[in-house]
Image (cartoon, rainbow, N blue to C red):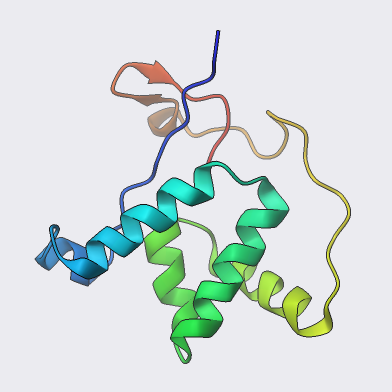
Length: 113
């Protein structure tokens, strides 16, 4: 049985105002891509997007992806120093899911994204 993966919907102001716009399409594509990455790769991908956006990029990417601002900052630091953390959590590891996050449209998620 294959695991269904949750694709996060962007909550930034631009997507809320124009959900069919070019920016919303880019954010949806980014979130779709992020689902296929492991923890380290998501952090680095978010850091690249943040760096591309410039000032305030961490906050914007956090709203797009749902990643914590500190996680994105850590990814930027890894990019700047060209170092990566070798440790990647096993599926199901990390903080327990909040009750509200356990179910989405009747499908239980096994990992928080």
